[in-house]
Length: 314
Image 1 (cartoon, rainbow, N blue to C red):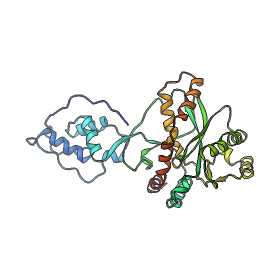
Image 2: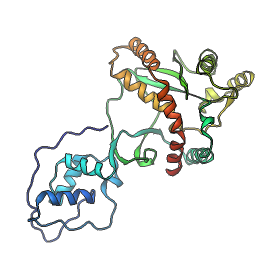
Image 3: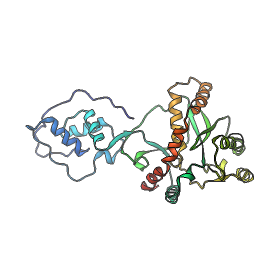
Image 4: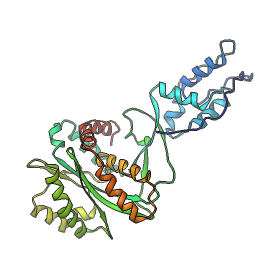
């Protein structure tokens, strides 16, 4: 969760007289609370006209920015008061989901997937092996971002941070999981291509299926990266009779393994790895600590996530 430092002591000043009241951006609830702080003897601020509040228009606005906006209208409140008032009305500071920049075609495909799978029975999701690769940076992200949002709005476009593929000193790992627990994880040395991917499928994915005791007819989810869709990989999958979940391109928010990657990276960076060797070590150690209950919970709530994606229109 976000943490913001208080701006200092509360200023209980009367509003300066003016010919006309200026409507401050922000929540109408903040203005009401500010009026209460100044006391009944002071002039109450003029009611807000019908307009979107600043938090809704810009979820990334900080409490200090809101404080400054209110001060322009002669309303003086602490940042802590602003946060408490927003929280009271169901708006909380949250770390935004990261999502690749999508084309209209990608958005339509994500929406189609969510719509078609809203009524899929729970036992279907419990027999899927979810796979993915992720990059883990040695020193993590240098800047943390937060957005103001209500519960159930994580996938709305204004509450996301777009991502692109780039990086620095880091490792690439491939992992998988199912409702019954985490599967194997492997650190990828060198460039990821079809041959390397097929080796991972053979040496890590297949053993994970047995380890996790997936039922007959299990289905594997994979992305649409070129290594996954090459003729060589397609042939390998057919020869090994692996059924695939039809998957839209550029849709990490549909893959619950993203939450495990978030857990993994947070756990690794709290241990402050000093070099690539310790980064690899911590990665394997922390992945092994992921519990079956955590995995089961992600799959139990998967349909709820589809509803959010559908409500956000992709």
